[in-house]
Every structure is written in structure tokens, then in C-alpha cells.
Length: 149
Image 1 (cartoon, helix red, strand yellow):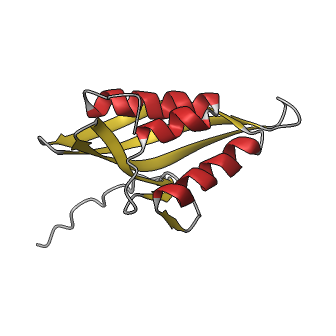
Image 2 (image 1 turned 180 degrees about the vertical axis):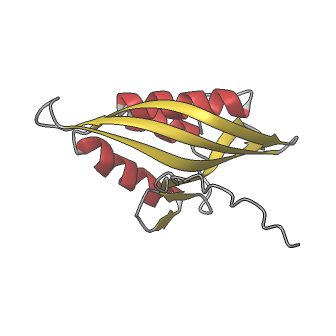
């Protein structure tokens, strides 16, 4: 039985990113539904299904020593009484385990899905993918109209 009751999907999402940044496995799993149908997909990774597999995966990530600082942007929320879908960008600053000099920046396109149950709102899906490289558009000058006589 979960200890924390998240009264809104926004509360669950805030707890998810707080746990992610602190690399706190117990706090992370407090956010997730304990259903076997939960799924987690990390950038470039396979789909992980089931509470225990999701827990083990987060455990490996947190034990790696890499720490993430995450700023959210471009959030779009579609919410109903029982389900809430969050589409957003994670702007990530990652530091390596050995030295803070090993810093990487990335933008991740993410979908988080929360389900309302008796114990409050819980995450049932976290799907994150690397954002595509920005498209650079060149302005092509328009040709002067041709005049026929």
C-alpha cells in the first residue's frame, strides 16, 4: 500500500521529477501505480512493463551515479476525471558520476500518463524520446513574377 496520496496529477508529476533529480528510488516508486500494466520507455531504450521491472530499471539508473537536473517546458495537459495525459519537454542537464566536468545537455520529448485510483493519482506510463534536431529553415527569395505581353 502506498503511503502518499497525490490529490492531483500535477502533484504526482512534481513528485516524479523531484525523485528523479534526487535519485530517490523509494520516492520514485511512490509515484508509480503498482499495476502490472505500467510501462516505462527511456530515450533509445526498450519498453519496460510491470511494476517490478520498472523499479529495477530506475534502481539501475540511480545506481549509475549520473545526476539529472530537469527543467520542464512546452507542457500540454489533457485531463479528465480518471486519466491525465501530459506531453512536455524535459530540458536535462546531466552530470557524470566521476566528475561534474562531464556535463551533457539534452532535450527529451516526454509523455506521462496518470490514472486516478483509490489511493490518488499514480503514473502508469513514462515515455521519453530524444528530441529531433531542430529544423533550420532557409528563406528562399521569391522570384519576381514573370510578365507576359
